[in-house]
Amino acid sequence: MAELVIRKMELHDIEQVMEVEVATFTSPWPSSIFYQEIKENEHAHYIVVELDEIIIGYAGIWIVYDDAQITNIAITPKYRGQNFGQKLFQYIMQQAIKMGVARLSLEVRKSNVIAQKMYRKFGLIPGGIRKNYYADDQEDALVMWVNLL
Image 1 (cartoon, rainbow, N blue to C red):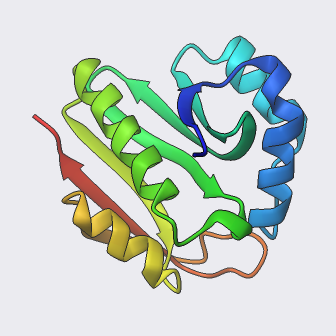
Image 2 (spheres, rainbow, N blue to C red):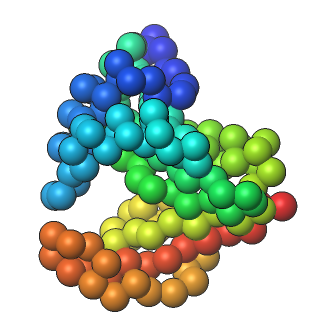
């Protein structure tokens, strides 16, 4: 049986995280951003999900006081639809609650109804629209949020 591990992202994980990033996003972040986030951003927390020691997904969250913002969450296309994203998101929410976060928010493409459906399972609700949010195609983002405490 495959072993699933969810843990803090380390610098040595960035090469595998970039494989997930490139396979997932039309405008992937460069690896330098991940290095900067892990090394220099005191508000950033990044998590990876491994299946048999291979990183198949990751998520990032910024926590400032009692507010948290999901920066990104991604599962390699090959592993989607198997609840790995749901397990990763649940882990992030649990960690945020342990850290005293009162509100969690994120942006999601208006067209990404599968992700929106998953977020709704965790109690997130639409809170607004960010017009032309995505640089690659100017798609609007739906802002979703939830009170955790």
